[in-house]
Image (tube, rainbow, N blue to C red):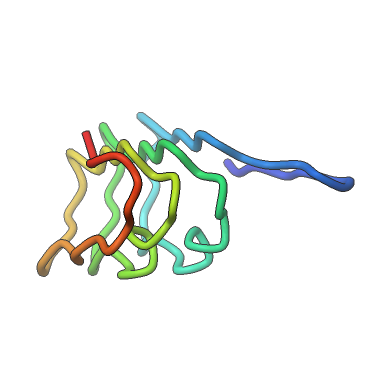
Length: 86
């Protein structure tokens, strides 16, 4: 499961992984997806650990869905001036 892009001016604005029994942690590299508007990693995944702080610093992020995982710790604060998260 993943996203691959090649070429110039390619952006990812939505990333969804659901019902895949994904295990591990949320990779901090997700924060490099600067055009990301929606991140959905939910339902039947088994991610653990903390939500990387950089995710909520993404300037265009306005929806985040991480339900039905085993995440722990506080949700990092957003300093983004974009729309509030849904």
